[in-house]
Length: 321
Image (cartoon, rainbow, N blue to C red; front, side, top):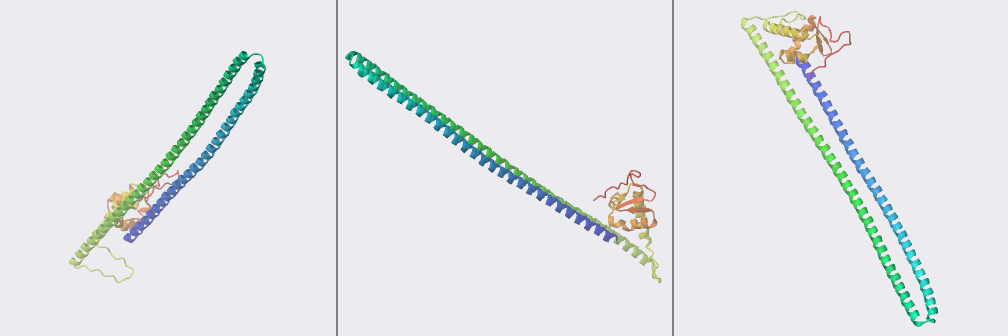
């Protein structure tokens, strides 16, 4: 019965640890899915922002182009106005020249030369002004194009940095997940090794009990003692060696239980004595049957002991796994 109960406890612990590992893996998968969703959302947000920036840049370029066209049109209107004024003044000068030609050839020649010089100066000044205006317009246009290209390059660099950071975060998350999975695999291997060690310990305890029973039986056979029981319900009298061993274990178990009035688990009793839990089944049942100890849940208490925290709420220590 002790071996069966011990195997049931081990099976229950294995199933519980399996569920906990399964729950932990599902939580890790949920975290990974959440991180993947956040990365997709970040990339989608970056795409939307990039489209918005491109739209704004196109609008700004269109606005600058319209403004430059307006300025150029204004300059052309001023130039045409100057040409009209020049044409009007030329006509007036020609008329006055024709009027003055009649007054004197020398005076008219001097005035014509002067008017021609003024006209050439005016045309040269107009040409210089037009060249300066064109150069300024080209310079402004080149500066605007350069600034737009610099801003576009800066946005591209920011986009590359964002993609690089998201890729690094994804790689870091993947590495952490792989580490957690490797750690979980290592913990499972450790648990399996501990269970195998527990099985080996139980097997050695059972083999020890079998050796003691075999020795007791051989002792009884050598002395020629044979026990016969005719009544069906008469209990079998255990061998002296086995009874003494059971009594010694009961004494040790009772000593450990009395030393812990707050309660102690079956596994902790076995650890205190230094023996496999399966070998304490008869001793614990004997103490409970004699009324020398009592059991509540998974904890054993002395008969005269009090629960820890009495008067302030019942408190039980969690069982060690």
